[in-house]
Image (cartoon, rainbow, N blue to C red; front, side, top):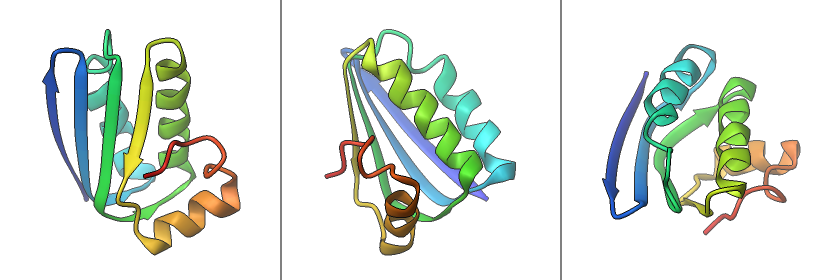
Length: 99
């Protein structure tokens, strides 16, 4: 299960993820972000409560990265050790602005 909380104000978007970003929940995440990301110049994803990510979740993150390249800045905050391990193995530490 994945809980997605989001806020949008003055072109700045903040999304908080809680749970697992996996094959089942990745499409829900993309659906939630798809209309939300239009016109955003500053996008922050807080992964403080995200405990697991699969390749399906990585694909959605890659789509967000590619979208934000043309629009503005993307930051990913508070990545737990297990998710960071996946980012390191998959090369996402080179793609994401991790804080």
